[in-house]
Amino acid sequence: MNALRSISLRAGAVLLLAVALSACGFQLRGSSGQYQMPFNSIYLGFADTSPLGIELRRNLRGGDAVIVVDDAAKGEARLDVLSETRGKSILSLNSQGRVREYLLTYTLVFRVRDAKDAELLGPTEITLKRSIAFNESQVLAKESEEALLYRDMQTDLVQQILRRLAAIKRA
Image (cartoon, rainbow, N blue to C red):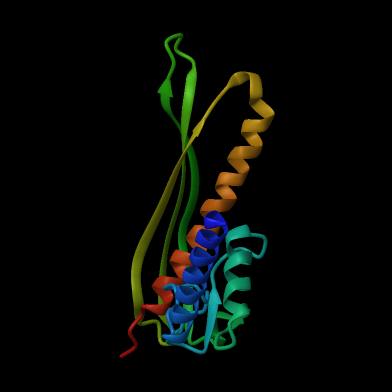
């Protein structure tokens, strides 16, 4: 009986806390996924088949405020990709000199200019790194894990780009 009462009290306390937090307007920072952009339209300088460009377009179009245009002359802002590279290097070796761990990197350098070619955001480099353990008896599984880590880094990169775009101050 005491155990049931204890559980009921805990559940009630959690419910009361949830109601109190929702009533005060508490919201996790960035949890809505929407950012207030300082421009109404943007041209993205990614190749049409770029997975990063496709995901960034989808995220920008998901919000109501920004239109992604296909012509650089029609956009209020223009995101120019200066470089985009993925890398894989050896992080550690085992006692036999075989690879034990790799370091995956994803680097993007971009800048943002307005329609008059004035720089809104100078060349900005974002570098993401993830380590991945390697086992030569599980090569196919590790290749799939590597692809999954790159996809995760791409999603993280899109969120960082969106935050940087939202932070631009217009004159």
